[in-house]
Image (cartoon, rainbow, N blue to C red; front, side, top):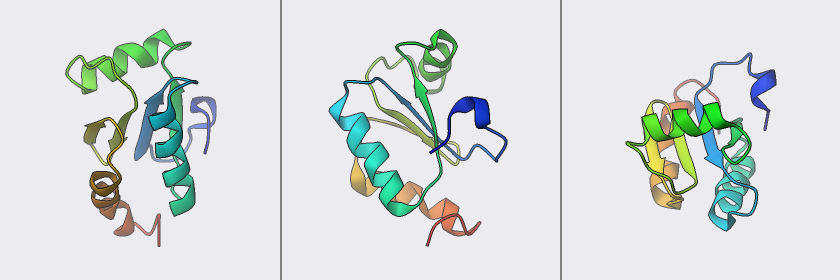
Length: 95
């Protein structure tokens, strides 16, 4: 996982989350287990990230909001996230 300050790589996976959110934690653990690099935005502290999250999610205020290869998911759905990650396999980001 990298913080947005370290974001020099292609930003293919972003997660907008809050510290106490259990579904955010599950989503991040899932991505880490898969070996997927992602940028984690804490929308409780980062107002710009909150604005971006609302914009890409159609105004959703629930977390996590996950952006994978230009697909946006509100909430953590393991199957849907797994399917969305297939775009990364083509660029050799995950096995």
